[in-house]
Amino acid sequence: MIDQVLVALFPFIYLPWLSFQQQEWIKLADRPKIKKSAVREWTDAIVFAVIAASIIRMFLVEAYTIPTSSMEKSLLVGDFLFVSKMAYGPKRPQTPIAFPFVHHTLPFTAFTKSYLEWIHLDYMRFPGFEKVKNNDVVVFNYPSGDTVVLERQNEDYYQIVRTMELDQKNKKGDSYRKGMGRKIVWDRYHVTARPVDKRENYIKRCIAIPGDTIKIIDRQVYINGKMADNPENMQFMYDVFTNGTGLNPKALDKLEINEGGQISNSHYILPLSDDKKAKLEKFANIKAIKVRNREKGQTYFPIFPHDTKHFRWNEDNFGPLVIPKKGSTVNISIENIALYKKIIGKYENNKLEIKGNTILINGNPATTYTFKLDYYWMMGDNRHNSADSRYWGFVPEDHIVGKASYVWLSLEKNKSLFDGKIRWNKLFRVIK
Image (cartoon, rainbow, N blue to C red):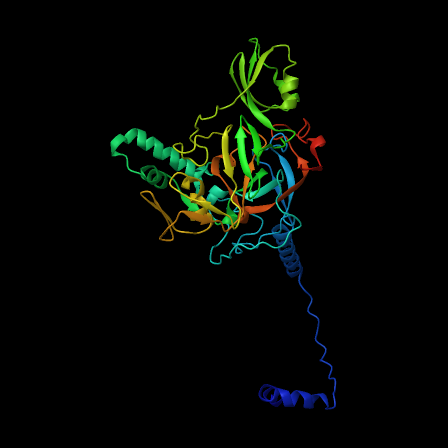
């Protein structure tokens, strides 16, 4: 006890003095070894495994599966893939208190959150090996997933509200007031908010990076005025006309055409790549195959930025649009604020108000805005069957999860194990 007091009061005198004193090593008394029970050993092993697996999942690599056809035929429904967190640098968990190995909902429950928001950390990304590049296949948190209708989780909350607002406007006429549709949605369903890292994971191809200018002319993407490289297995929807006889289901299955539908005895609508289209044209009963294309100037309600007065865009004819880059400044006005409302208000946490023809940011009139984050433009390879940036806009850098690396397993959901369920030719392939 005296030694501790002297060290605390006179460290510069007492410690040097100790160094000249005789040292004596005193062995600790032998302590009996406590044998762990089998339950304790199993518990320790499970805890260690959970912690180790969680660290690997958070910071190194994570397994995903493809639930929708938006990336066909580059990636197929039933593909199991590994996503590298190290490629672009892993994100620090923003919601660290969470049930392990699940995303946002507890197993065996309908709506119960798998995480607690007692602690929320700001966005931070550790260094990675590379930057997101054009044509990378990227996993990211769904930007419009900040608010979710729990009974309709596969739909965009904002599109649900927009549709309901339009419905009320048509029904109510002059008695319509803005917000009626939103109130109905909130009264009818369970609506919740999710932090960035607990929003749904999406996988798409990065078409444009910060600073790029994107334009789509009759389905063809142009980046900075030059025709972009198209994915090898990119698909569009086609009207397929026959001589009145139906298409053989087994023949379609052999071509891996498993979507679309039959309109009449002689009319089908099918998603086709160039390769599948060429093979289908050789069928004896095919009369014509015509690609679907929405004409320039023809507006489509769900398309970003959801302002048909100022932007007459659709999924096939879109832009030009400059992708926001961190530190760059853009002029803002009533005519173009629809492009940047989410960025300013939601992604970069400012208070945005529009009063008449005046735009207020944090209470101050603004005619310009400087971006705090980088943004990306993501699109699916199944171009006419993909909910992507054409519908909900930019992907902020803090939503980027990782780079899709390779497929290790591929299963056909509609087949049995002994009837071709495993796609052997699709295993262990690098994602391009």
